[in-house]
Amino acid sequence: MRKIKVGMFGTTDALKFKKMVKSPNKHHKLKNPQEESNVEKVCQELHPGKIKVIVKDIIIENRDCKTFVLVSKDGKPLPYFKAGQYVNVYVEVDGELLNRSYTLSSSPKLSLEGEYRITVKAVENGIVSNFLLGTIDKGEELLISEPCGYLTYNRLRDEQHIVGIAGGSGITPFYSLAQAIIDGDEDCILTIFYGAKKEEDLIFLEALDDIVSKTNKVKVIYVLSEERNAKYEYGLITRNLIERYVTTRASFFISGPQGLYEYINHELRDYDLPNKFFRYEGPASKSVPTGNSYSIRVKLENDEIIIKAWENETILVALNRAHVIVPTKCHHGVCSWCRTKLISGEVLMDNDYRRAADKKYHYIHPCVTYPKSDLILEVIK
Image 1 (cartoon, rainbow, N blue to C red):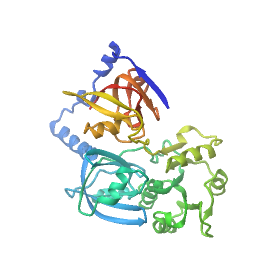
Image 2: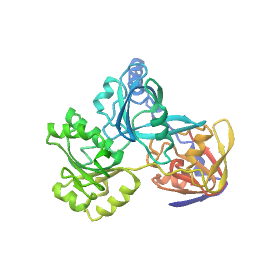
Image 3: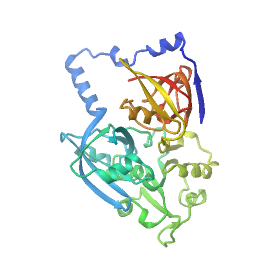
Image 4: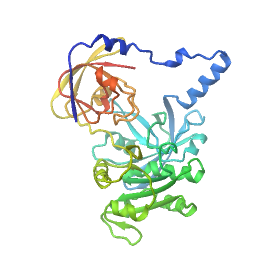
């Protein structure tokens, strides 16, 4: 973690930076009004921001995991996505407006038929996941974001052979990619190492096996850590195990709980590959309202409020509890959508993926930032 401390006032350069034009499109208007209208319509369809959907069906995957089948409220096609992307789901729990990201587990092709699927697994102290699993029923309405995320195959960046390393519900981006390969939407080779404790914990087992039976481009190696079964590997996903099945140069995609990342990083540390060949879909920063409490003065566009925040909860959670909506897409400090001006005070950041200019002019990502003193913030919308 990295501590950040700033004074009360910014510099003249900071003011100039703040006033920079937010949308370059304003200076590139199309000459033909009809052409402009059509372009704006397509942009709105592809990037609607937030989408109202209806829970069409709920599929029980195992004892603590369900798949929610979502359809567009107005019956129109949903924005197309690339396999591996996620949506944010917005819910109100005990008066708090919360949102969490869930990877789309369906085939991208289904979005053209107006359907998304997200697969949610119960998490200890997981407020949103447990709310969805225990409260939401068929026929109810949900608010979600447009698809976003970077755990996607790009033929210009990645090797054609993708090695997916999954733990628990981290199988979802690879299940989506396997479906995209079958549908002909992606042209890559996928080898999945799927770790779980027992066979009953494996999600999409039959569906994955069905895909494997239909193509030589997808292979799945199941690895159980607490149950011996002749059909599966036993133990942990090690470098030696990976090298038994993967003999060609590959890109590595990793998705699962925090412990998986720490372990896999150690296992793969000696691979002689550029960083771009390692891509992660990390869990959101832990956020628990405990420890010392601090006062945060929040400057909004036409208002100013004072809220309370706890030492061990992210600033984003504190803002959402006060119904201050901050644009966000990833909850991992990567996308930069939630960037917020830190005018004064001291904070601690889990991850620091900020651009150089944001660091220089004291912008933070509240989704991975914790208060260490009273703060003054300016929310940028």
